[in-house]
Amino acid sequence: MSAPDFAEQFRQLVDAFDAIPGVGPQAARRMGRYVLSHPGSRALGESIVQARNSLNHCAQCRMFTTEVLCADCIAAETTAAETTTEKTTAALFSGVLLVVEQADEALHWREQGYTGPVFVLHGVLSPVAGVGPTQLGLAQLKQRVAALQSQTLWLALQSDVAKGAGAEPSVEARATELFIRQMLPDKDVSLMNDNAITQAINNAIGETECR
Image (tube, rainbow, N blue to C red; front, side, top):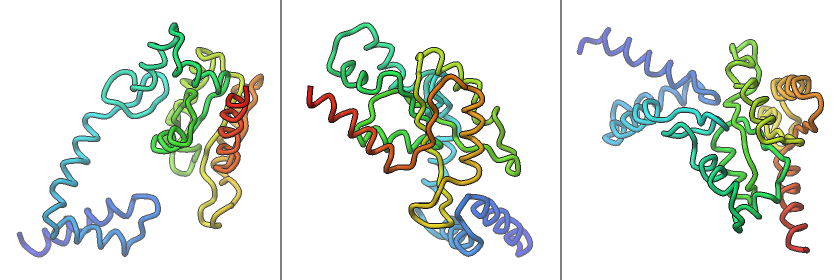
């Protein structure tokens, strides 16, 4: 490979990494060097291609899945007519819909004890970045709220990470909250930080244990 060919391909590789939020030029260059020199980078590339080709959004909650519906939504439909412990656990959050910014955050809240339904936005409103209501699936969110008869929405959206831990929600998160409030004026919509959601989950679990 000639020097100009290498330079162009390396620049494209670095630019691709640099486009990832939170990755600066120096980190992008290190990632580019890793991809070109480390034996494990081929497996990394194959994993990325496989994930992009096989995963899509669940038709109900927009969680990543290889099927039309994700495992959680299939399980919810299966247990809807059954009297089981799982159904009783899900009932702890009856009327609640947890709306998260990214799919991995839904997994996090499952690990913390949340067993109710979720909806994944895959971002927040950002006209500058070209992210609007369509990209976030907000019309689909409205349909899910109606189907579930949800009365309360917990919004777990991003904080202004540049300002450090405990920062207020970002401007984009506030804008997303406002849009959802206006879209669902008869619902209780709350933009909540991690501590508030953790407390709400613990309160719901604690109330059941006391019964």
